[in-house]
Image 1 (cartoon, each protein chain N blue to C red):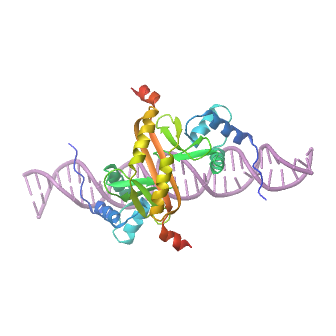
Image 2: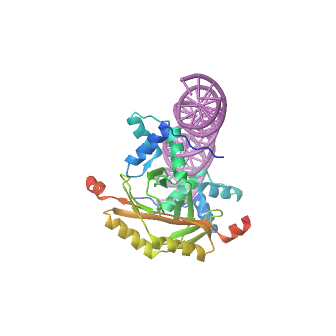
Length: 132
Length: 132
DNA sequence: CAAGTAGTTGGGAATCATTGTCAAATGACC
DNA sequence: GGTCATTTGACAATGATTCCCAACTACTTG
């Protein structure tokens, strides 16, 4: 039988950070924040915790242009993201039309096990005015 | 004034490979193919050539699930891809509705300099039947 | 064609995110 | 408190990609 995961200080700390953040953040950023708060957690452990959470679909993961993986606690259900390149602030968006379109395209071309990635990147208005 | 790029054997070889391939391939795969053909080109040079081509929008680049960057010679103009996970075979697709949707979402939320990524991944029918 | 010059190459080192390793630490349960 | 499998953390290892720089070569000019 599969054992239940343990409730450790480290895992709780990672989850707590994700609850505080409203945008996407990398594993390393989360590690830094933990260190600043004095709730130090090993980097490996941060990576592991995020992986577990992502596998359980409790957080969403995506890659930025640099290929880094960013994580964020999101609402349940399929959705996409409008992400600020500079601060990570994120708006969850839905596009039912897009979903249907993607499935139709795939079916028309005989593809199976279809998945799609769709993210919108931009500069949010506060970052844009800060830069000016 | 900016100098014109030189026409070197190595760059020609990389372009030739891209013309032969019909799916996405990684820099390392292209490097391997060149080696097999006896037209050896340094790995660094393959990376550089692909970067140059991508910057000039002569090839499209995307990341697979593993975070590797894949390259492919594509038709001009904005389009998206339906990519086979296992063989890389690719169908170019257009989704004007999606473009408008993404722009509208971004504008409604006050985001600027908007870009979006959209790729559809699946298993093409020949790979699916080969697996069975 | 010869020489000059600046863009280009290659291969090995360096980078950087991420994963693997394994002994020590610690939740969960008795 | 004792037991034990899970988890942690420091460090090594990996792997794609970039950096570095001396040797090379595609163009230009005489």
